[in-house]
Length: 409
Image (cartoon, rainbow, N blue to C red; front, side, top):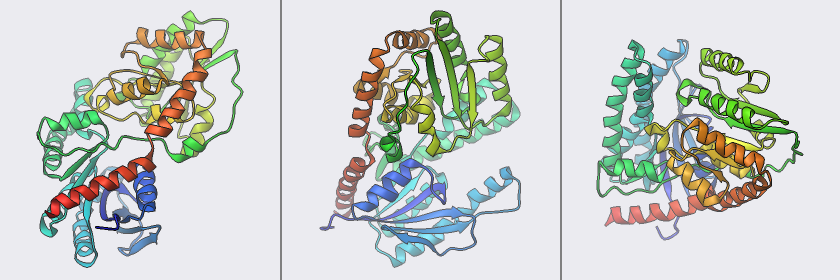
């Protein structure tokens, strides 16, 4: 271990090609750039189990998708097909030098990593990006039907399995410090190294300038457009803003993937009832590389999430991305990592999850626009210095070296 470089076996729930920034920027790019070799085992539609990519210190093995069925059955079958990852991963461990096994998100991937770590005496790291089970619990509380009941029962089983994996791993990577605290209640001596979300380099480097009109106030929410996000609250907020800021045109944009067309219609119907339909816009499926074009035109970014468990312990992707573009953020304080980022960076305001309090914060900023530029600059500088995948990769490398050293003693 004297060269301080590592050989990693990475079992991710995601499919190839990887499109999660936390994996592509942190591991594929920065972690590999400092000399570590990463071998990935992923799902893919092409019929081959050979090396797909072998460059930049990343090797990727992939397993064929199930095809020719409807999406729900296909997804169900594909999860069972990931069991093939065990066979391929074991072969890799038998034929190649591996220092540590990492599993990301998937329960099956987690158990494969756990079993192989025991067999081959290698440390096992588990990276969890979300409390997936908590969302189905919350959905069932809101809408008690048979399908949601089945998901609720499934979530109870998943919760126990995730807790088991977190307790058995040699190092746990929660998406936030607060997720780590949640799991610490199940294991007192849990070794934790949080990997919070950071903006992509594309967002940080984006420098196209926009001249904002003083006659228009633009507010932008970007993210999932789904009932679980309770985005109708933002319409109530916007109604209050319109009642209190007149003489200027106020605009509210929702940008993101629409998972439920009925919910889109519901939002539009509510906007019409609140007399907001001419100043409220929903833009579906904007490519990632175009999102900064929209966000940079905003006066304020909105990151308002219901204070359910899954969101409270999450890492605020949209908040750090807005700040990386120099756009101030208003994000509710119940999301602990979001509150931390906003307050540490000075890049916005974190009111409580209440339509009147959120509206009050936004109105204050719109009435004092001279604060916005300074907030945006403060937020951008802080995020670049403190939410940086390059720095995170180097710190993680040192942590893994110490874990491996302890494991070998």
